[in-house]
Image 1 (cartoon, rainbow, N blue to C red):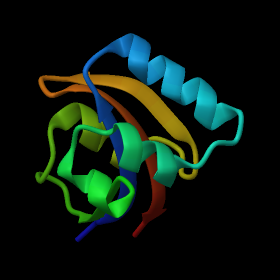
Image 2: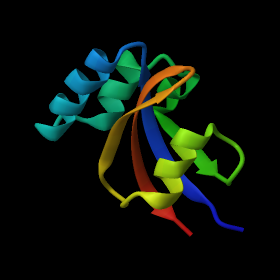
Image 3: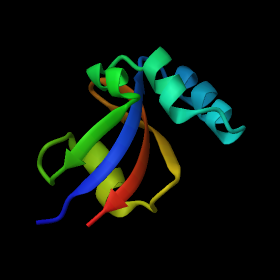
Image 4: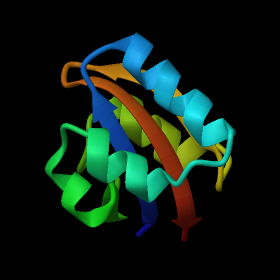
Amino acid sequence: MRSAMAKHILVKTKDEAEQLKQRLDKGESFAKLASRFSLCPSKKRDGDLGEIFPGQLVKPIEDVIFKKPLLKVHGPVKTRFGYHLVAVYFRS
């Protein structure tokens, strides 16, 4: 079965997500920004979602995790929860 490892930051607005993405593009730490700004409980693990299998997360996030290039920050991705920045660092 396919699986992946990813981190994400969840915020309420697209503007917030875009501002955080700019900070990441300038070299700020994903882990630090996730633990400080994310609304998801994964913020306690620096945004790490752990090992993910298809069917566990909402479709827009899974599309990024299983289809987009590794080691890049993708987003903002809109879901019913808010706006996500997603970084996929491993896929098998």
